[in-house]
Image 1 (cartoon, rainbow, N blue to C red):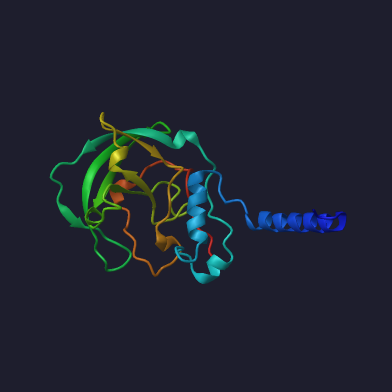
Image 2: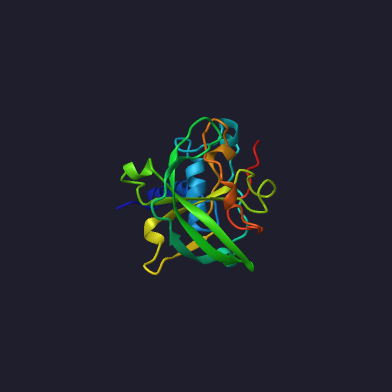
Length: 208
């Protein structure tokens, strides 16, 4: 059995270790699980697209306030027998895509339509074969949000049996080119511009 002196020392050491461990476990940055996951990946040097100086000073990505009015249900129309085409990028790279379908929805009283794409390279990868690619620009592009547009991931499994899909513009992200010009990123097609201010999701990145 420990005597009183040893017990006091033992308790002090235990509290010190616990306090240190608590300080190491800093809370994840972000208001939602989506934002926290995105911030965590950008903070991780092994995954982050950030340049070294930006990573060193990284304190989290900037987002618009969460706004439930930017969560909409869209009507999906499949595009049958769509041809494969080379999508323009920020470099000479020309990845192969197909137009997968059209999404029709109303946002802030404005009738909107976006074309959703399917990467032909992703079809060969079991991990990403169900991913669809939804790039868009809006009236905040080039000001509060990245000029090249923002992206949203939609899964084929997100499209319901009655051909609808929920689009959450709070869960958008920038192409890697917004952070580092060494990346090659698809350019948002002009027809995917929305004549509305999408003040939701990721903002433009302020580089150091």
